[in-house]
Length: 92
Image (cartoon, rainbow, N blue to C red; front, side):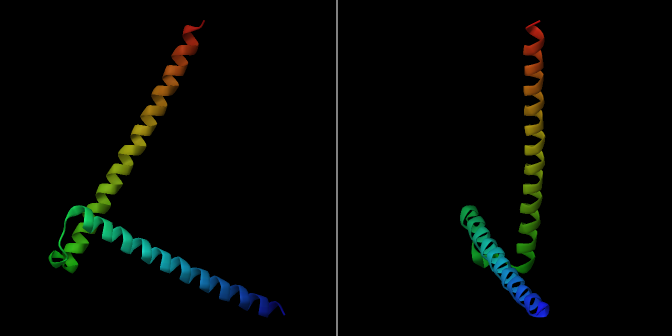
């Protein structure tokens, strides 16, 4: 009986993993389409090497942007804390 339940759970897990895989592929296709559309690239220009090069370039650009964004949000939070501290100290 327990084996049957495990088999059913395993089957559900396999189906869920397949759904996740399909959703990832859908996102990748959509993202690729948007990048090509917004950058005015021609499909005829793409080779396997060119795709890899663009992927690395875009990936590193996104990583740099995320790092800067995180630093800026930290700076904003720090300045807000400083402003609040200054306001509280000026009340005394």
